Amino acid sequence: MHYVIGDIHNDLKKLKQILKQINITKDDELIVLGDVFDRGGGNADPFGVYCALAGLQGKCSWIRGNHDDWLANYTYEYFNTPEKKRHKLAPYGYNSFELLRQRITEVDMMNIADLIKGLPLQKELELEGKKYLFAHAMTSYPDVREDDRYYIRGTMDIDCFFFEGIDGYISMCGHTPTDSIVWKKDRRYLDEPGNSIWHNDRHNVYLLDCGCGFAGGRLACLCLETKERFYA
Image 1 (cartoon, rainbow, N blue to C red):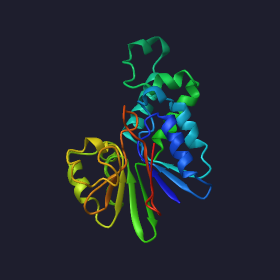
Image 2: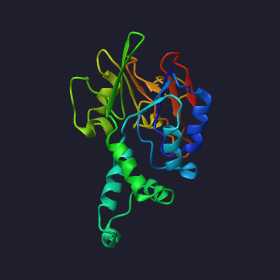
Image 3: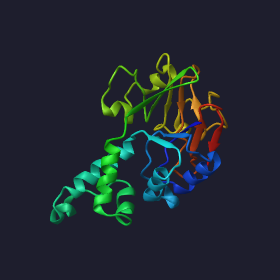
Image 4: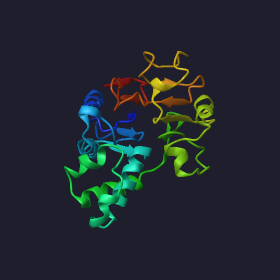
């Protein structure tokens, strides 16, 4: 089976709940739509989330999100700055950097930053006669290479992308919390309105960021073969 999971945002408790529900095996694949790090409230454990994903029995395809990218950039800047000058750096804007420093070494943090920077911005998959694209904020035609920001943060045309998608493909994205969509009364949610998976009228764009990391938010997961949804 192929499972797609939305933005995790450091929430180890919700991630474990989802992994328990789907009971992934060595023959399965989990596709993570980015923003593994930052936020998470009282359940924030970036290293625990990293270890949980790294220890999966099946294949884990991790797409780079903007929060992942920001953490990697700051990690490089901090550890490449002479120690006596680090106090002049602005603190990282979220909790992941300090939480990681409490748990792991500089070398390990740099290795995670290297891993993040090596993550794909977009993934393609053909399954049961359907072509899928996976990216954090927006997808593009496979033969069109946009700049990094397009995939991890989106552009001013993101609303148009939500409605139109990419012809011939089904796009799976995170980044935009489904509860914040201004047209959320349009009945396009797969489950209850608000923090559940959203799709457009063409059924070629699905948004899976259901607010995990925020108070009242949920972590969402979708099985591509069965269309079953899982929430924590």
